[in-house]
Length: 256
Ligand code: CIR
Image (cartoon, rainbow, N blue to C red; front, top):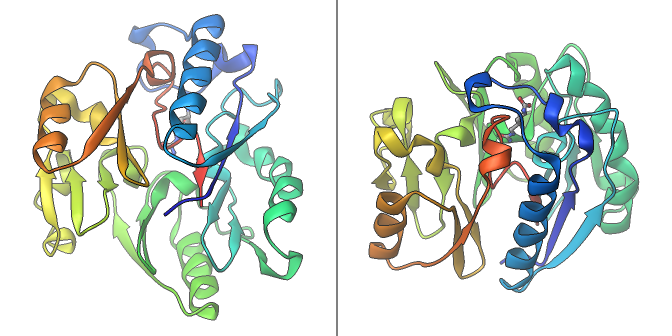
């Protein structure tokens, strides 16, 4: 169960966030802010406390707070984002982490290692780490070494197409895994009960399990039905403005 969530409000500069889909247009700030407020309220309705950080205009992608740290019950790992324009975001998360973790339990990934939290999927005490354009082998190695220090484990997964590991995967607890695209037939995920996302709803693979609920992006009916059929209570959140800059439900929060 999660008790706490950290989010960061988007700034006006979100319109300049990194995107692989410029054809969707730029996010509209006012709409993004409204969607963020709904996201926070929805999280609260799942029984977690939400700490809302102020926007960082210098970092257009900084509302995607998941990428700058990986939090678990034993330690906090501050990442080293591989996207150059995002790297400085890591310095802005440390202060708030000190409220929740003893300083001796806050660990750091160092150059030349890079890693972003979107590439990390937690399954109990095991962490899958995607090797992507943002996360390199050295970053994954440092990350797994830190986990082992705390009695946790990790393993690397090579990515082919997607931005982050969790762009195409979401662990819904109870051995249930949402899988999309390049991960559907990957033998690494054979042991899970797979809920396969249709090609035309790929974006909806980025769902989050929060206590007894699954948060799903609004507008993906087939995915919603599949998750309901698997026995979950679902809550819909519109993330259309974040989608324009490759962001989704998991990217917008740190849950621990
Ligand atoms: C980026 O390219 O870094 C942002 N525009 C989107 C980050 C999405 N984060 C995530 O999937 N964890």
